Length: 143
Picture (cartoon, rainbow, N blue to C red):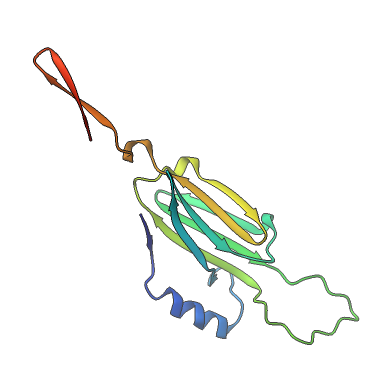
């Protein structure tokens, strides 16, 4: 149901890590998991250290875009950085959603550095019974 839009995304992610922080025009990738759970798809993005107000989620047609920005922590004049390995900057991920998903009812939760989106399967995509008329009687079958 979900497709990656760029088959070279992992290579791009490694290159971005070597070249420095992401910017709004050239964001870094963020890791994600996607799976089906009952009648909905769940997509989880790892974005630790990002505040909820620094996350932007958009859906245009079937394209889901998640952007987040990790800003440097406030440091005083007397702080000397000894080691900095946590990436800063802008992170983004785009995925194409199948037509069978209900993009009008996406739910988003953010907890412990994980953004979780729950996307329900559209009613029109769920199996349903179709009634067949034969003369004056109807017979139900599975569709």
